Image (cartoon, rainbow over all chains, first blue to last red; front, side, top):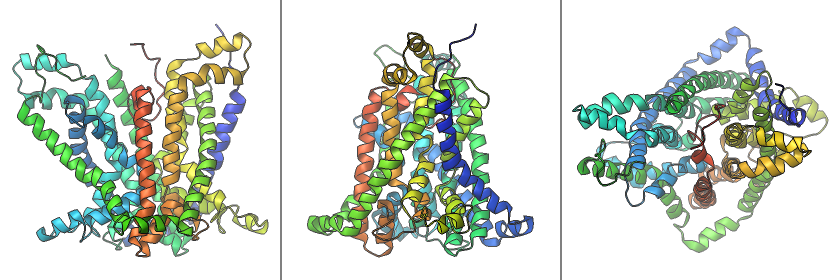
Length: 273
Length: 298
């Protein structure tokens, strides 16, 4: 049976496509065009230069460590928020989103003030020989801060919907808490955790504002890829900026594909009754 | 929910020792990681006393940065909201080829680094960009001026309103709108009196998040703004400028305005979630608007 067609498709779709074309696709297309016009040899020379490769290594390594921290802490946070009742729980739940609401530059200068040599935490860590600001540890902390909410917010709804009778069944079979956690609960959380990990990792790869203040930005050691693209731009080396930005764009598209796949999987799991 | 009623069997992790050590671990870590940045902003900003703080806020470059930030938001957020409504209407009320692809394209800006967005804009409107020479001969300034800042902000926030509306409007189906139009209501009237009342909290939620991001955007805007003090410096850029100028207290004063905005945003978010917007209405906060099968009514 033919359905009645609602009005407004040409206008709505037209405006949507115009906005996306003008605001999103045209600039990205121009970037790809610029990078492609370099020619394969120049392009490869720029993106495989030692300084660029070092920046990929720093970025990916720090993003991996930050995501690992968020995995542990995010899971603990989501667990505490859904399973336990304690004073301040609702406030804590609201505060989890602060890293998304706080502008990255503001996060950057406050983390630098906290972890700098004279800062509250930087000063406390200094006697142990731990330096945070202007090292890779600083980059990791900035990345962990800005991407913290992802894993909490993907795991939380799954934990809330977890059926108590599954745990009861496992307990009646004699499973200890640790065994049930490992063999029953964690497998149920895995799709959501993977979705959260890919979101968190992707965000870390692209982060800029929070990192540049705390990183020290030494080439080869504490220079992230986003900053290298920015520096090339400030040097008016536009081809190099285009090439490095295009590498980040490719990484973003790979992460978008991974995230979409993970999330579709996580959603299938949550919906399965 | 997890609350244990009397007589219910204990659940995993309910032993008091485990429970309270985990709570203490999480609360202490949250204090260090999440709360202390807020506290340090306040102490650094007020470190030289209230008069110095207000003097820093009233400084002309600061005022112009705040003004520019508000102007950018006043332009970018309404256009973004219209885009979100249009995109959600097209994607959820009609079937057409490429619909799923369109949803993915809407989500692209979430994955792309703000720096990449900013750099991309240079290759459109910069002197060596596609339209740069033409624009220069016509004496139109887009980069290092308001239009560039607005467009870069619109890039990074493109999905904000759309992704709040799409899952909700998808779940609500098309029956009500079809009934309204079959009774003779125009498309506009149908939207205003049938669709909008059902999605107004979700829309407001998207608008508030979009506004927070526009006002706080740093990476993309720092590439396209040119950082002309008192002219194209938004508030986040002014934070950086003062910081690198070793005017730490003034920099934190600027940051405190943005932090205040962030706290207001969080409060509004919690309130809207109580109205059923945001993650209360969705399987996951950070999930893309995957078109869901019609949800069963609880």
